[in-house]
Length: 334
Picture 1 (tube, rainbow, N blue to C red):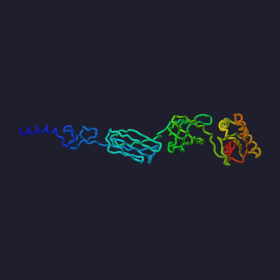
Picture 2 (cartoon, one colour):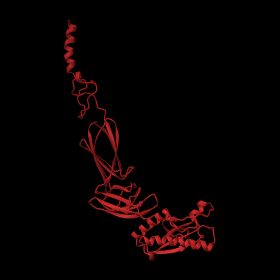
Picture 3 (cartoon, helix red, strand yellow):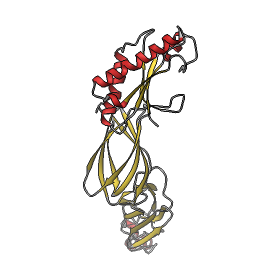
Picture 4 (cartoon, rainbow, N blue to C red):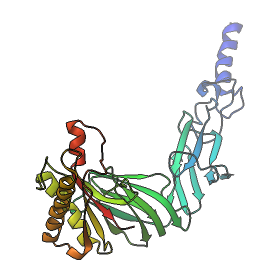
């Protein structure tokens, strides 16, 4: 009788107790002897929370910018770093962090919700004052190139150009640039390149890039223009491939009147009599000049030169080597 009465009195007493003194009655407390963490996150379960954290890294490309400044605001607190990275621990899952990163004219900002799992976030900084610039890279015929690369050399103010090269598929693409003047080298896979300045203001703009015809150097160090024109054996006639090369060079010369003197230099292979080979090489050069003049290039800009067999492109004696020597190429005056 006495035992039954004691049990009846103990039951309601246990329901009102709070052994861990966290304000949650034991009958509702999942962790009777460990107090609840009062922070607004699952405060009613009676158990301490599993806290989390986050690390921010400021970038302008793929690498962390170690000089960047980061400022984070969370739960009434502010934390700052000047090393390009900022770590914050003991954050409540579900809470939010506001963060700002900056370096020179680049900046990034965002608000991030804390997960139960620790996370890392890259803040990709962009020019704070910037505009979109659309590039269209064209070949000498005015057609879009297959691909082009923009190599960013410098900017004024400093540091406002992209830190990595920009690849333009089909020669077309949009780049976000900081306001100012940017120096960029434009390259295409065929070896053509041109350097230019782009001044960026408040409004988006289009930039058309007309690529020059690529070329190398001849045996004497002269700058070659465009591709080489090749001929059949003992012939000075332009075939379809040769005509295409001449057409490209013609278009380039018409668009670049500053090239006032271009030597059209003919060559032959070693077979045959020397004087005949010289005459044949002149005929080849003259055939190319005639085609250029017919397409609108002024004759007084062109110089005919025949070298015969004296400067072979390939010293070999195979049919392939001989074919390389039956040629005309274009030399720009130094």
